[in-house]
Image 1 (cartoon, rainbow, N blue to C red):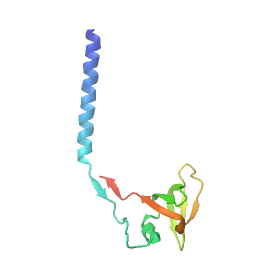
Image 2: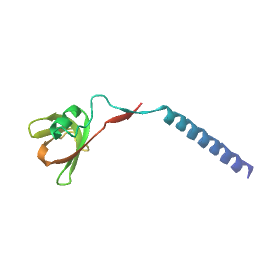
Image 3: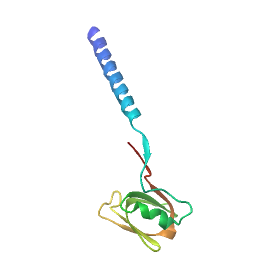
Image 4: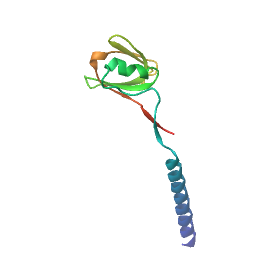
Amino acid sequence: MKKESAIAVVLLTIGLVLAFTFDVWAQQKKVTDLEGVQFNTGASLADNMKPFVGKDVFIHLRSGKTFQGYLKSVGNGLVQLEKLAGREFYDALIRIEDISAVEAKLRDMK
């Protein structure tokens, strides 16, 4: 019984040390805005997407389908995604008029 109690105390101590260490680490990090990227409700969808060229985005279509990939280019009425999630060797050409929403990373932990 003493051996099991000692093991329980050691495991509890390790757990508390890990929890405290993670808490200290988490408090040191702060959420910061990424430079040069933001959404502008006064601009067109195409203009909002241009700062995200080369970045990972989610594009939601009116049909309900979602694409995730790196925004390669934004043109007149079309966008090109490359390295689609789960299909890294594929690209997609999407009509801007079919897009209902765009998700992109605007903040990071530092």
